[in-house]
Length: 87
Image (cartoon, rainbow, N blue to C red; front, side):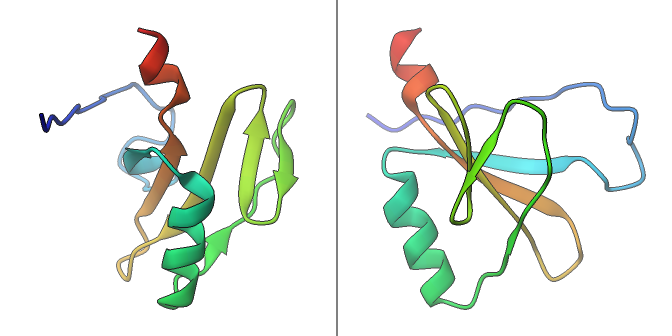
C-alpha cells in the first residue's frame, strides 16, 4: 500500500523560509542521499546540538536526516523512516 503523511508545525521562522518546507521519509536514507547527490543535489550542513554529521546525514540516535534546498531556496529534507516503523 502507498500512503502519504503531511506534517505541519509551528516555526519561529514561518514566512521567512528558514525552516524545513517539506520532508520525505525514506527506507534507505544513505542510498537516497547518494542518488540525489549523483543528480547534483548539494546538501546543507547545520551545527545542531545532539546531532552528529556523518557525510551529508545528520544523526541523533535512530533519527537520520539530510537537508537540501530546491531552486527557490526552500529547505527540503529526507529522513529515515525508523520512527514511523515504531508507531
